[in-house]
Amino acid sequence: MAKRSVLVVVLALVASGAVATFASRTGQPALPWDPVATFSILGFDPQTGEIGGAVQSRVFSVGNGVLWAEAGVGAVATQAIVDVGYGPQGLALLKQGMNPSEVVKTIWDRDPDPRPDNWSKYGRQFAVMDAQGNVAAYTGPKAPTWAGHKYGKFCSAQGNILAGEAVVTNMVKAFEETSGHLSLRLMAALEGGQAGGGDTRGMQSAAMLIVKKDGGVWLHNDVVLRLQVDDSQEPIKELRRLVEIAAKQRGRMGR
Image (cartoon, rainbow, N blue to C red):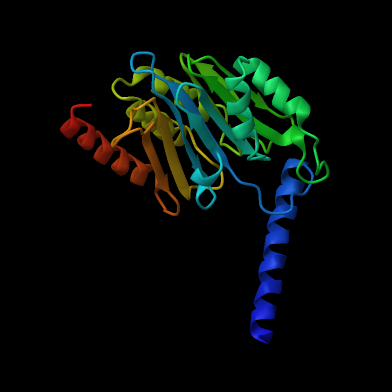
């Protein structure tokens, strides 16, 4: 038991040191744990009606909180100084008839900012896309740098703790210039973002979510694709492998 207690203390000291280093480097308030670097893209295919997103991050199992989507409604990506509740809130407001810009403003304005000292709403980053591919995003002034977003045709790329603006620029360019199924276009965007420098802290996990009414395999399934790579030294490469397997399955099923 004593050895375990010592280990916990050591890990705590290491973590606090990492956070302090980040805070001193960026000039931003110290966070309660080492900040998470993430980049994501939301995309829409007007020919098929499919909508979804893809994400890569230097955190374990990023697919558990960033991406949200509902067929016929839209998609949300929530990251940086994240409030996972932005995901279901965004979908609910889209259902009420709000456009993405209204949704973004409403969610942020309603945020009570319960932890302003170390988890400020001014550090949030999120994007909202409706079922027609209209999109809006917010990157707070306290989001860990480099942080920003960029719109493209039927897409929005956003990220924080990135090598620079080239990451999101490359993502949009890759999405717009890639043909084929939405999964291939989202996949190309992640690869483009990594080629632009990606996360400054490296890679660990990736995920993809695509929806369409009755677009999935089996009966009454709106999930076209839900893929997660939770822990890998090359999560984007592994996600590509899974996307290609899914493409072969669609081919066999004539979809």
